[in-house]
Image (cartoon, rainbow over all chains, first blue to last red):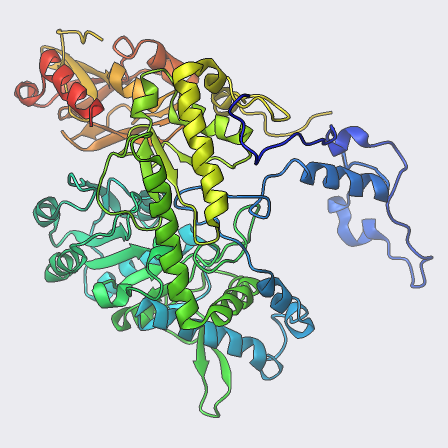
Length: 494
Length: 129
């Protein structure tokens, strides 16, 4: 551990079994008051559906529950502990002002079944957030319903299909670049389109000649991430949009990397017809651990008739409400109107920053990624030298000569007190290390990260076994991910 | 790695070994190595028609899910059922673990594929990227 940096230190945490193993019969963490209403015969009410016992439910006391989950929580790594450089995930800080606003009583206790006339404040939040997101993206309309990014993709492609159907032909396939997120082809398949792969050129961008050759009247849309997963801005984006539009196709933008564009460039201005946003990435709502996420879909005017129901509208008397009668709609995609708590947080973030603050956020995110690129260039191989936006992708080519691959380096990074970067993605870079610091990180934290990465590169040269066997400082050593995938154990058994 | 010369290769890293109008198909050692530990192989059913260059299945590793592309057109006559329960066989012996047997539509299609030497050169360039 001679290269250990200042960030990681010894940390005592307690061993903890499964909650099922702590169970002993008759213990409970609750006590009900005496029954003061007539007892109901549940067997009579439920017939054969009545359960006589609850199976193997753990029986523990209140303090045992509290200690169990508190102990588990000390095993976590979180953005509140340090840098979380997972590329393409935009693991930025979740500002406390978001949480403060989300806990305001009228918002925290609002119920979706309240009549519209007493929900005007909540509806005003949806309306204001919609307007902000439309302005940021340069699109014409939006639905906030989808519960996360991939759900947004699906909603977007359902609208693409409905649009083409209304033109008389749903078309057959979706073009997807080889640098795309894995969810893109999965979404296309879910919506019953064939997927056709589009190769990248030597700069890591869409190959325009290949696109021209593959584009025809069978193509419903191109799904493009911009900046793409290499952190590279598609400089020919206008040309790409023109090629699609000339043959009646639509341009779908995966907004996963919007953190590089907010306040600087608007997808609506560079030819995008439909796109999703990830509020849990770009707009600082909680990410991971179930979020929950939120994946609004913004569209151009021509797709408006196909928006999921209900659609938020301003009524003739000036009040806000939901419109359900939309004959061309793709239908409802989510209960109620999506994850409302996330809308409150995202709007708090947007309004706390304001236009100039959001622009600054984008600039800082790009600056930080470039700071890391400069700090590690030469030590790690940089497969594409095209300018870096919000994330930088290295490869393990230099370290692989000593047998250390991206996964080994990532595991060793844990010993230095950091969450690993994204490994082995994007697929067009063999042995990728994908690093996205976001604007949240200070120069000091990034210097620690760079120092850690440099130290690991030295270890690979001098003592590769230390890296290959990492992590060493964690509760459990390296897990057998292959066995977990080939022979998964999915439930506890007594 | 020496690639067997008794078969042809694609730039998508499949191999095909023909004998008359029948052929067996698998993925190359380079492919299994870049994928890492393979945990699942998804193959088409017997009787399915494959078109050259189109996907016919997927290989899932701990890193990623990758498409399989048909090296030639033809009809599937047999699927290697072993791989459903023991996908690690592809890691252990990629060139000995066939995935499909085909009746070729046009054996001449194989002339357009890479020889072992050409494939080796192609892989060296790709790995050197």
